[in-house]
Length: 306
Image: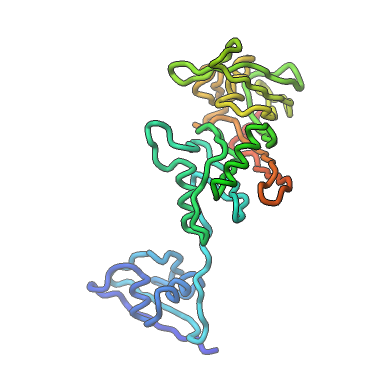
């Protein structure tokens, strides 16, 4: 097929977005113009144009090379969001990998850009146009896997599984010091202080039982890489229990914060990651398992401290 080449030099009155200039030049629709850019048919001053919203100024030369008979469809955009990435999605639920530093849900301070907000925005752009229903949470400083329901009924069914301790939740952490036991179980009762910090205390009406099993994966120079499995899922559970036995999570600003510091851990996040999540899918009744890679910051620390 014959290639058509069109070109124009931007005049002072035509300064603005490149897509508008290409529309005027080609007389094509907006979607076709976006398709031309996506397929590398547009250049500005001999440089390939990759951004449909790029600005052109007076004196810039735009060249469009394309086959008139071909329909250049706009390419499907990959959703990009700093707060999460999508690991799995179907008509009923979505599993995401949360970034450290992101609140799962807003607090009483009504913060914006919480994870549930961002996932809901993502879903509102999909064909289903649903919202995210919260099932469980991760601390702001913790990264890793979370599942959201797309319907209230699905979320309720998943919440019931969590109440019955059926989902399998596995974390990895780098903790200060060398843990002496290779494996074991932490059992404690947690209460909440006036500053909202959690602490271990005697059983009572206002306390919550917290059970975590652990297995040492590797002892490093002066830290330990450990895997933890939640039997219960209480707020700050892993962090409080590790700090209580003298091995706080590296970078933890709340629980034994001074001891949790390490010259080799310079990240603002803490060294705790929710790496595996499994549960029974409410619709299919089949067990589903999801895994998240260990964050690069943790991998680099481990490699440099062996």
